[in-house]
Image 1: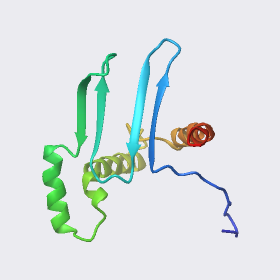
Image 2: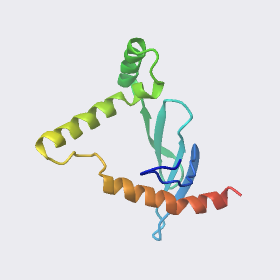
Image 3: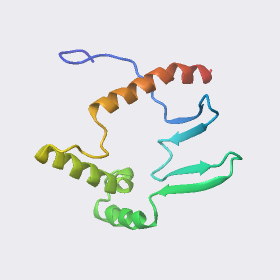
Image 4: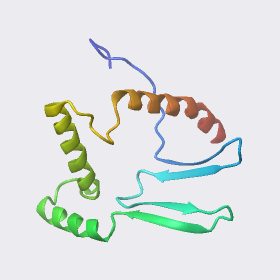
Length: 133
């Protein structure tokens, strides 16, 4: 769109992604994400042999109860709001405290962190696009 204050740019948006980063010292980390795969998320940690040593699910059993309560209370809301509700509350409380006291909003990304994250994403996009060919 054109007009005052608007910038037209083309963006690439991935709904699914999977990649592995290997350091010069041989350490590896893999990431797989599907942001359209439902409201549940999980992360796993594996050892050097590929054996799973830890798994974290979101929502956990306690959060599932909260999700059910919120679904009943707000039946027309988007489902992912319910699984992320505790995080939204935490972020809002920390940002509000920062606004009132000026103290750093602990654990909340700054605009600078967001900008650097987008730079990394833009740097990686051509490589990822090339691998999709």
